[in-house]
Image 1: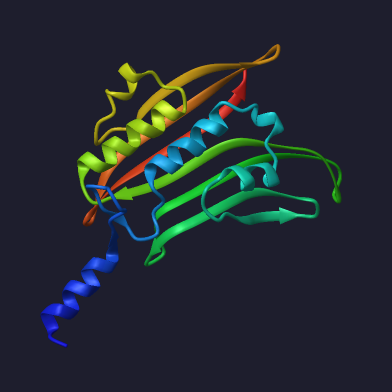
Image 2: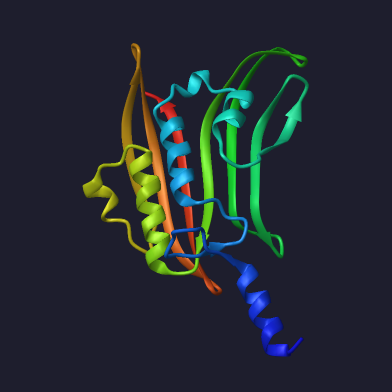
Amino acid sequence: MSRRLLLVMIASTIFIRPAGSATARPLGCEDPVVLSKALKSLSDSDWNDISESTLQSKWPSEITSANCKPGACEMLLGEDRVINNECECCELFHFDVSRESPDVVTKEQLSSIAIHYSAASSGEILTAARAFARALGISEEDAATIRGGARQQFDREVTFGKQKEVDLITIQVTRQHSLWQLYLFVGRHAV
C-alpha cells in the first residue's frame, strides 16, 4: 500500500460524513441536530423531575456515572471524543442530590449541563452553537448574535406549575489547534 493511500485512509477516518450531509464532523462527535433535539427535550422539561435514569433515557449518546455515593451520582459524563486527555466532544450533567442519611436519597434533580463540541470549520461550529441555543429557548434574534471569541451570556425564564426558574446560559466559540470548539453551559436556578 502506498504511503499516500495510507495517509488518505487515515485522514478519512478522522472525520465522518453522514449520508446526505455536506459537512464533516470529528469521529465520535454526535450529530448536532440530534444533540439539539435532546437539549430541547431537556430544556422543555422540569429539571426537578429529571433523575439519572430519566437523563440516560433522553440523551442520545452513552453517559456514565461519576462522583457517586450510595443511591445516586452527582454527575453523569459523556466522553464521545477525547484526544490526548482533551475533551473535544463531551457532556457533563450535574445533579443536586438530597439525602435523608448517607445511604438514603430523598431527591435528585438535574441542575446544570456543560457541553464541549468540536467541528472542522467556524461555519459548522457556529451553526451548531446557534442550534443548541435555540434548543435551549434562546430567540432566533439572540442566537444570531453568537460569534467566535468572547463568552456570551443569555438567560431565559421558565415556569413549571407555580414554580419560576431561570436558565443561565453561557456560550463560547474558539479555535483550538485544527478544530473549532464550542463550550456551552446551562444552569437552572429557582427565582
